Image 1 (cartoon, rainbow, N blue to C red):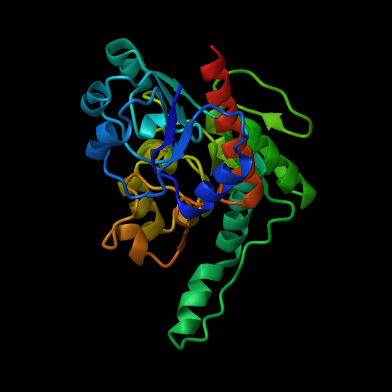
Image 2 (cartoon, helix red, strand yellow; image 1 turned 90 degrees about the vertical axis):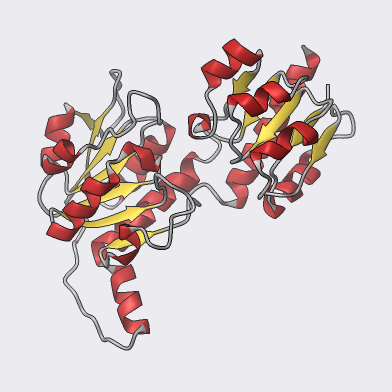
Length: 304
């Protein structure tokens, strides 16, 4: 079986070359992260496996990839780029995802965004670069309550970090869970009591728009909101209004409904938002874990 990494950036291409073994099935690296979906059929000619980082795979394009039988998606958020069930039913393509590779990296980013929001660091940084000596009151996080919405590996790491600085940790999950030093509560209580709300849900049809205008209104006034999961979990228009009104005091966002974030998006002009470019998982350790897991998927598929 032949595999093609269709949209490798420079970093991931280098990791793949380093981790490939001499006895691996044929594995081509197409080092062009800007490839367009319509170019995939030509690139994947004769390949049974596509390794995809961030490129959309619409059903019409997938149908044109005649020999394609497997997609190894680099992460858990494949639904943002393709419809796994439809690809399986209509095209005979199985979509494989990779979990756990960047739990610590993403949690550390969420933790950093929480601190930046609590201290207003991005707002002061922008003001000082513009020549204004801006000094503002901050939120002391020790002793405060953080609410984790969704509780998988990333949230567990976030809980560990937050407990380490003396925060009370609440969590809500769609299925019952237990974890040391974490109190699981109904979502309504979490929203009402948390000084910081951090999202850790997968994006599905059921979770799209999960943090609605009504749920934003139910949060504690002056809350800090952190999202390193998926932008479409939040009603962005409602969030913008909550930030303008001060209902949400600060937000730290690594993900957005439309990516790259348009330059004229309202979030860009709001001073109380810290923005990062969907890069929470980008550390050398996470990249090694990610590409190593992708290559293992390819090896298992080729072995039958």
